[in-house]
Amino acid sequence: FAQCFSLPSITIPNSVTSIGYGAFYECKSLTSVTIGNSVTSIEGNDLFGAFEKCSGLTSVTIPDSVTSIGERAFYKCKNLTSVTIGNSVTSIGDLAFVYCYRLTTMNFNGTTSQWNEITKASAWEGYNSLTTIHCTDGDIAL
Image (cartoon, rainbow, N blue to C red; front, top):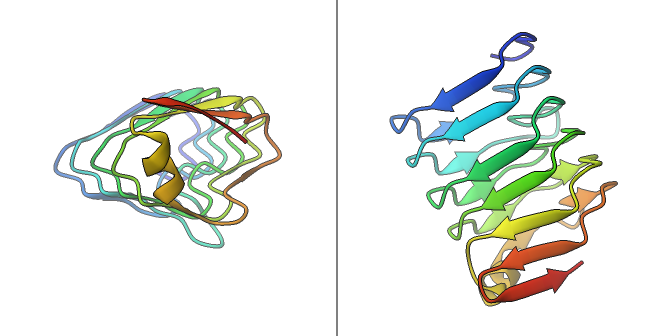
């Protein structure tokens, strides 16, 4: 689906277990993504993230089934304002949420202790306005 400039929404069915790197690269009109409960990884590499440059995307909910958010997964999603991450995530890759300029808060469906256990690349976020992770038992200031 890379560079499907007129794709407005996508529902990833429960039969899918992984969203590959570059899968929705530069789908600029993509505003709505529903991720099925069998997806365990949202992939990326040093060239392309799964949803990289999806500038129309404003909100995403990553289900509890996902354990890995890959490198550059949401890189340069410049209008992304709302992210909810399921409590099974164990790793967040390099540049995963970099240049998401409007992202100020992130919701995590787990505890602060669980958030702190997630392996995060040193540059998983940056060049955005992210200041707070809302967890089920309190907030973490970044």
